[in-house]
Length: 208
Image (tube, rainbow, N blue to C red; front, side, top):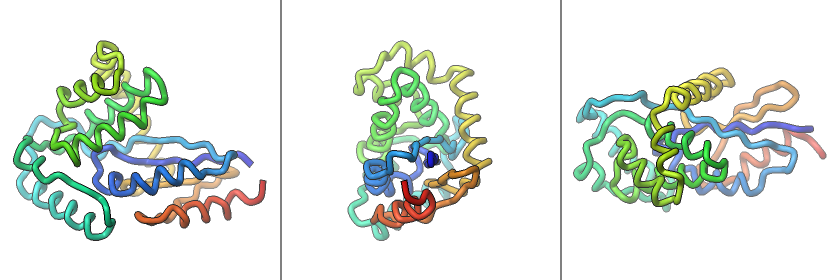
């Protein structure tokens, strides 16, 4: 039986960053008859406005909460003093689509680069300048990347992925949804152990 595993995420979602080590283990151990499909969730639309102080404080509290709940997850709190935060994740999402357009292998590399820039390097992925810097560091065709980053077609692809994620029942990020025999199953997951997801997949897809 061929099944699809949808991973719905946002590169600037701090819980997705916390989940990334377990997610990588899940991907490595997926059964051969399960196709992985990643979808961008689009956490926050484009905005040039500074992030309200209350939102900044909420996110810093969230980061601290994550370090307590998911041991080993690191955050560089210098971001909040060195950058001008904006509640805008669409640029980072479009950067992943622009990287993917050059080669699908660049998708995961760009996701990781954005997460590390945001959470470890105190760089702001809401800024095109940061995203272009990451494209250069990854060795991408930067001229092509720059032309795609804010292209209408890239935004349309992002909107399609957001809509698909919603239509299959993604609630928050990250979300893992398995499609088998036309049925959708939202999977429960642990931030510290890949076993619960893998067990649910094995149970739902059955033998062979």
